[in-house]
Image 1 (cartoon, rainbow, N blue to C red):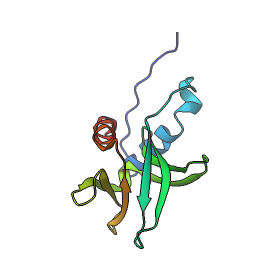
Image 2 (image 1 turned 180 degrees about the vertical axis):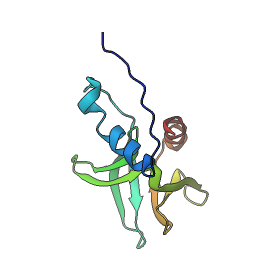
Image 3 (image 1 turned 30 degrees about the vertical axis):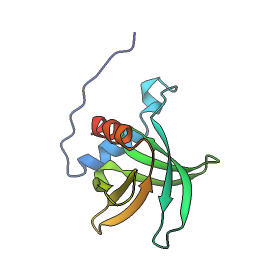
Image 4 (image 1 turned 45 degrees about the vertical axis):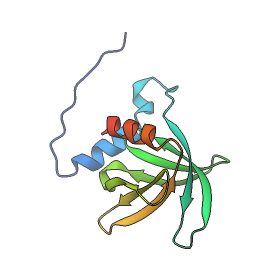
Length: 122
């Protein structure tokens, strides 16, 4: 049976350290077969161009992939100001990202489930 150790971080870069550790958990956890929640979404850009993508909720981020599996973006939770519903767009939500308040608009028919699972990750 694997031994469990508790680690306490007290440094100036605690969030960066935890994000890095969670991103690489599979290298030291011994569990390489974890499936994370995956959601088919539509990303809408500023010119109303729509692209179908997959969003995957990992322990440290929301990962954006093309439907062919190519990684597109990674939104670390530590850099997300919030995730908010868009009232005028059914199933719409925005990720408000980093200090500049960059907003990325998505739509999905499973918005309630996505928000519930994302809330559990925090």
